[in-house]
Image (tube, rainbow, N blue to C red; front, side, top):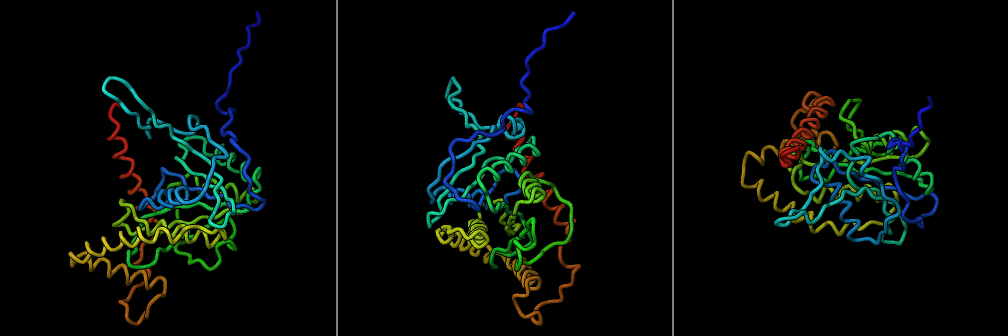
Length: 317
């Protein structure tokens, strides 16, 4: 006999995002994305986003369904227990904001936790939003621990779907394989769909990677402003950056060993960037610089260390 059919709602086909309001952006607008969960050395990406939202007018235009995208057991949301009851739950949010820059020009900012799941559907959803809101350029922000000194300007690795978007930027690495992340896949898929997309990864001194480092956030915003034409409150981060740099300098000055390490990093940095007279530098050939595989290995180790405490802080999982 015929069995009755059941109506099943497939999570795969469920709506991944919800439009909260239509933005006032014009054709060719900029979309910036900075997701948490991957490497964010010095908390540079988080600091940059927090600085923009704290200093610029903004409103929500779209929200993503994090229940579909996040694995709560790997990143447990915080709940508050008040004596004898559960009092609150901090719901993770993956949000697309419309932000007004210092000159009143609107742009879009996508921020929140990096999806654990459905990366392809998430990337396709971002592409839909790019096309719906006539985005002309997408820019991703990131930060990685590197063998660079805090006494030099924040360097960045620039990447893009077209080389013309990052002309003039130093190419630090050749081909290498490394752990992927959702922001990188978004850029790749946008490029395959014919959209302009680029990003910056600021180089954070590896010895400061686990501390807030405002200078790196300032560097990200500086390069974002330069590449996008947006008028951003970059200089407002200068006091915090100078304060942290002064504290680091004071600590380094107390240790001859630390001073020696920083001096070596300065020499290496200057040799690579050509910012000082090479005749005054020690001989530095290609073998003295980290290879792509070594950098990828360092990133994997950094990620493993970041993931470890997160699990241990949530017993019972």
